[in-house]
Length: 257
Image (cartoon, rainbow, N blue to C red; front, side):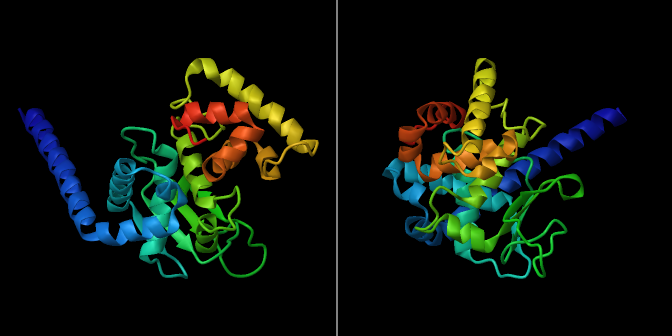
């Protein structure tokens, strides 16, 4: 009998948590929608390219993300533009999915600029633009505010640090950050994808590819780097790397070209 009561209490508390979270998200969307729509239209090229119905879906996903994830600044103040850029970076890679929650993320920490391996943003040896936490930092993401803003500027080119880090989170969702998002990639495509990665890495090493050389670090970084390319310059990627573009279209369920 006592066990049954405990189970019922857990069910009731779980239901209350879900209902409360949905109410919070709706309230957040109602209050923030006009501000966020304006900022999306001003700063997010991906959103600007959508038709009206897709824009509504994007707005909803952005608001849901912001209602469920804590964003805090360390050494810098977080404003609405920062929030919209972070949320958009999260939504862009998963926009093709009907329902995706970053259950492996609780909060995003925004630093003013680059930081080092000890998470210090002052002093020398600061060369990190973004990081997905592990160990005691699990569930946290650290981003450089300068890199975040640059990623959505006209000078961004093929790079977008925040999208890069959210792709790492997608990759990590199956338990390993290894460049093979097994929950997004059908089994029959895993080996062709790995062969494609290694083939392109050799081309980068030989100076025969326009992909950022950081991609040769490992398979996980390759996936994140070419994903940046896919979302930042889809037409260019499709023209220069049609096989990579085709595989990424399958992974993200989006045809960007």
